[in-house]
Length: 108
Image (cartoon, one colour):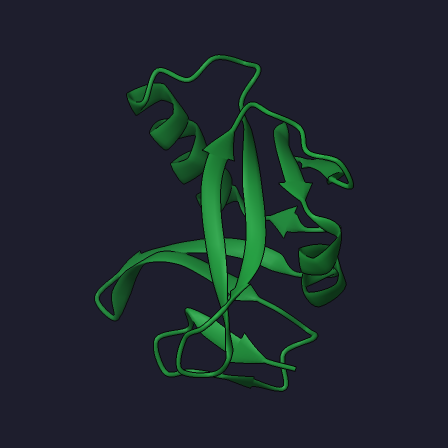
């Protein structure tokens, strides 16, 4: 399961409203090969379910993960920062043994 902080929920809601996405859209979280630590995080909005998708809901946000990503992201918390040290979504991933300085990639 992936959990979402209040700040991340507010930002996701804002992005969905700005993009005029309907209630049939959900947040797709995935892991792709690449980045300076080997694996990188990916966020997108989607409205098409794929075979093998795992669905969760936290704070009213519906989240989809493919099975491979689920194995890497189980227990992860999605946060959003808008401070001086950078702006964007942050993944607090208990499965990551190493992360890069920018926080956009990790390894296990």
